Length: 505
Image 1: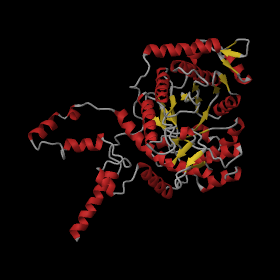
Image 2 (image 1 turned 45 degrees about the vertical axis):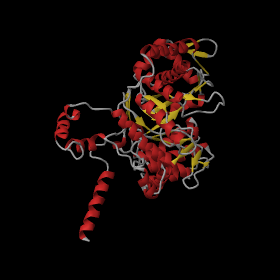
Image 3 (image 1 turned 180 degrees about the vertical axis):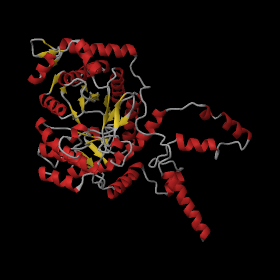
Image 4 (image 1 turned 90 degrees about the vertical axis):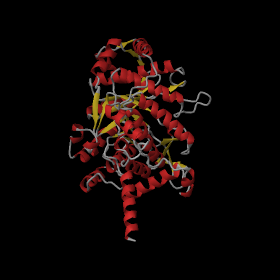
């Protein structure tokens, strides 16, 4: 009996060791991208040249008065017909003086990430109005409780490098209450870098007071901002949106880093041809950069050029298409060519269920964006149903998918040790295999990622274990996390201060 117990204990120790994080993580976030270049150098130059031509000759419409004055002051031209024109020298100066890298702080500094260069990070975005229910497996309206649950779920997932709200609390009808409670959910449930959006500019100042409480006191947040803003100041085609521009001014005043997002749709608000689409969307994102340059040169801005695709037969948004994959990869290539911190949007499956369509669309689009070197890949976790839905199971599955992508980005290290000349000789002249060799053990720990959800059993073993599919495994994992992970990253005093000042629901 003692021998059997010892055997069982030894087996448990071996299984625990296999399940534990390896001594060397073979695929951490921040791997280097950029090997995939869907555009040639000449094509990049032609797209950029066309974008400059659009800004110089067509320019931007519906420019709010305050922004108009600031743009004219730095060299923009009024064409006399309600549009401002941007000479190429002005655009190129904005590019030259733009922030090329900067830190997205987490409230826990150990979770901060650097944006820019050729490092790749997956994160979230979206405004899903429906949530795939864990119990019924059908969609229902997203709630504030869902937002809290999504936030604490992702807090445990290593490959979500920053968290932007993935769903809209449809049970909070007042816009100010919605903005306040969205930020509160992020503060309470994660210390990763976060991002939010502001419906109106007048919402920024009071919410900064909430962020100051979490940061330790008045004006503390602006010294080390751990939340950025998602703003869409350009409305395609080629005009500014006044409310969003007002938010930009307020964010800069409070030192809130920004993702200025262009979200044109091919064939609807931008040309259906991919080259034409890229030229227009690049011009529009450059218009956001010039706007920021006019207000405060070099202010931290993620150059978020998000090509979106519609099905031209029906007009329905298509987030999981091959066209989405290549357009976002090209967008990342263009942004990186300009030396700007790049943001793209991929892994937005059109599938409603967690099925083969879901896996194929997410894998193709997210891998393409990563290989192209997108610094921040938005919408990459949890999103389903063409961005209308968010799923707890999807978050868990996507986290494992991102590990595989990071492993692919890491590539192959060629060294004398890795080439294994001596190991090959020893195996051939010895036992005839590499199992159990020190060279194999070293590679096992260093070079391979071992999934916990993907099933690698042979069919009979899989059947004996209940023939469980990935959706079911991810549902079990989601329930386990939500049942056990209850962070509260606000002190009792901070929480009381916030609740005294705001309507926390």
